[in-house]
Image (tube, rainbow, N blue to C red):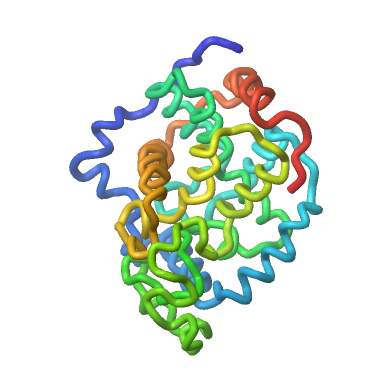
Length: 283
């Protein structure tokens, strides 16, 4: 593996305090064209993500018959994707992938699995190349089949028009779930998190369980950032929550206008890919 290539990133302590932290995940700036795009994406998501829609997406995508790509080929494809749900950056996703991985490598040089998790966590966004709308690819996730929590982006009122709210089975606090059933029993809104998790399990990826859970829940912001859905957690979910929160500081606060030297970093990360996720992956 090649030696660490220094990449400038703002100090994490600067981002976690004061106005710089507050600048992230700002969904209220109606005059910003990026913010208006984000609002449109979430309004569609909250109206159209239903139990039936999610199940239809499982049927569509979990045959893993859309493409066969190596991790690096999939990363290169992300160079053509800008996340329409992200108010923090308008840079291509491959830049964010290497920003996240490099920040993790700075703080966790002894955890190569964690570094690789940072690099690949958004690979599920490859769905956007197959005419999948961004509201079904990107953005914060939430469980369907129960009442939406008011701590979801734009609040529960943004779900007006979602037909599941007219279904008595789904229109309650627990909905179709039982209290403390466990986060892994929830049917999550469809997006790149759940998709990539399923892709990696199908591939036989040897990343540890912590990494797979990070990938599966890193966009579940109402849970890991706002404390929602605690009534559905079981005793084993606290470990998952702690890892997702640890990852989030590198995922969210690694965003900046600085573009890392992607080509010079590829050989290092290819070494990690060869250990944990070698070969062609079926998407």
